[in-house]
Image (cartoon, rainbow, N blue to C red; front, side, top):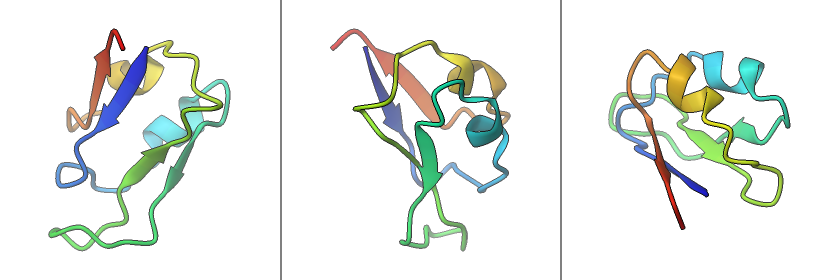
Length: 66
């Protein structure tokens, strides 16, 4: 499983990072078009559980079968 992040949708609310059981989500140093630092998923830590996808109010995450 791979998690893809839509950087431009992210508003850096932190709900994903707080709820990630493996603490695989942090925030980028790069600012998106809305002025936020978007979420970044550490593939080495991510287990593809989908909690970020479920919890995100802005549909930032996509889970793929890769």
